[in-house]
Length: 286
Length: 298
Ligand SMILES: Nc1ncnc2c1ncn2[C@@H]1O[C@H](COP(=O)(O)OP(=O)(O)O)[C@@H](O)[C@H]1O
Ligand SMILES: [Mg+2]
Image (cartoon, rainbow over all chains, first blue to last red; front, side):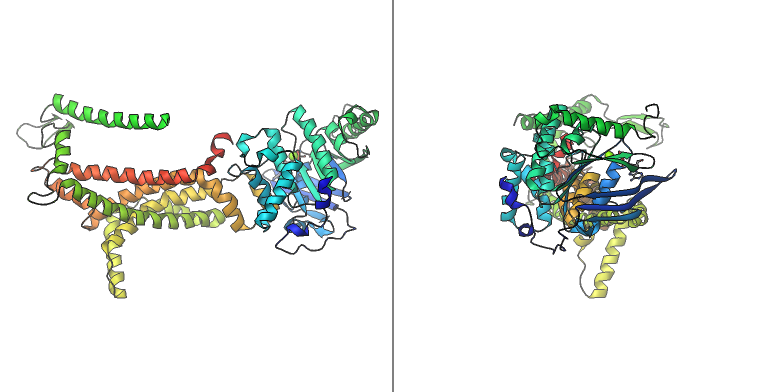
């Protein structure tokens, strides 16, 4: 809980740039009528259409669906790494572009994406460096984050000396560096073995609770989505769209005991039915 | 340590092998070589398929070495190795200037082409074509252009500047290509990350593109060094600059029938020159070691 006091304004770490004031009452994310099409060689591919989604501050929302249903595309639109073809995206009441400039979100991908020539500490510090945070403040924040993800002894190591799970923890620490109130994660545990995966799920649940950040989490694992989320958004391909939203309220307790509980199983079943009930997927099933 | 010792060992073995080959062929080969298709009575006819081995064509290795310690051109002139060292030093200095010019020009061109696709389409073909212009034809033009520039501007255009410019003409090419490829090397995920941190072009260049380009840059810089040395030697000869190793080689080769071991002095000098140039770039690589971490793993 010690990190609780360090969340919040984030003003102390931003030496340069004047982040435009975020509306405190605004949702962490609001998507209205968002669509995205790519012009491919064989004509136009509609990756997303008519996406309506709202994520409250501090809420944990997972996006789940078969591959190709536009999960990554939606996340990239939220992150302003791509521009939507239609519709509007706001983050804490600001346009996605402004939110990116203000570092209102942190992002992590399936690959850790650490810079191999930088030490663990320097990798975590990269977003801070780019936002002009001075050296002393940077070092303090890196120490804090390394502790949060349990890598204090490894800050001077290089990524090639770390296991995949440890690299992914560094990536998570880096995504938290600028104290974002929104975390975007695209299958961050997708490349890890089951043991590491479950361990990091518990860690992420703890970190999300401690920092109070809202999370948009892409996964194709139903148990993972249920274990972590307050709500699971079910998507379907061709064209990519949201077909269902399943509330999975399991309270603040997200530990291994939860994985055995009957409500957990009930939610897993509910999400599975929502996924398989979509007409384009497994048409043979009821 | 053991790797370094074995590298030295292999180097020594290689030199020994060349010496043995040289002396072995000299001992066993026919003095006048082997000529096929010669018309009797017609001098110089036919094709020489094995070289002559007499002392004028192939001096003994020890004679070449001994010649290094004899006076350069008789009398009380300094020993040949001193003259060779001076000449090689001058050429190395000019080649280094050419290398620096080439690296700067090539780096800027490569970065511009990487940034703007349109520039790549417009410039790259010309850059490739530029390397096919024969240096022998091109060197005197550069020199006379420089001289005219000097006359017009009221200053004297030193010959060595022409040589450096010509050396840079060969050196810039691998750098331009290496920078173009290297700056485009970062993974999509890294570029996305930097974009998510709202990093501009400069910050992305400095923190991501350049470090990621190092594995492409080092071979390019090494090639540029070799090219600069070759360019400097050829340019010296073709514009007739005095004092460098190229000119010395040409001069002593002209007297080879009387003094066959002499041209080998500047030849060794030229080889040493190339080694020193390549070695300097290798040192640079040592300093940039940490940017090559990813090479083995990722
Ligand atoms: N840059 C792109 N160019 C063309 N088509 C794309 C591009 N990115 C994604 N797509 C297409 O959009 C659809 C959704 O892709 P994606 O968002 O990666 O799905 P998911 O992450 O759910 O597996 C796919 O059909 C994919 O082929
Ligand atoms: Mg995806």
